[in-house]
Image (cartoon, rainbow, N blue to C red):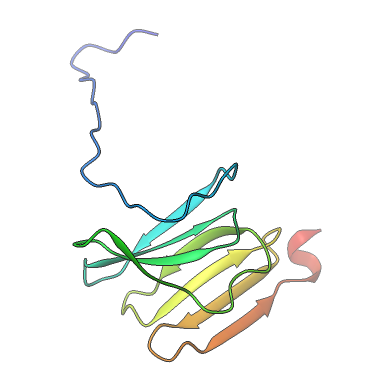
Length: 114
């Protein structure tokens, strides 16, 4: 398929590489940025959620209590207070309060998945 007239080809170049534990054969990862622009959270199919400091490009910490299932999605609340993860077969949602480490788990059941 040829580009339409006036369309430009964009080549993305990496501006940063984060180095941490190698997830092996795991293939998907989700990322979300904190509103301060200094940190990022990542979740992966190796059952990990990690917080990263973007200036130093180093892992800050593993999020507590997130290791039972593959992590399909991570999100940070607008105020940066909460990190939300979606785990398992999209049937477990966790909300972790960043400052205190308090984790609330919501199990999705019933008509949502039928």
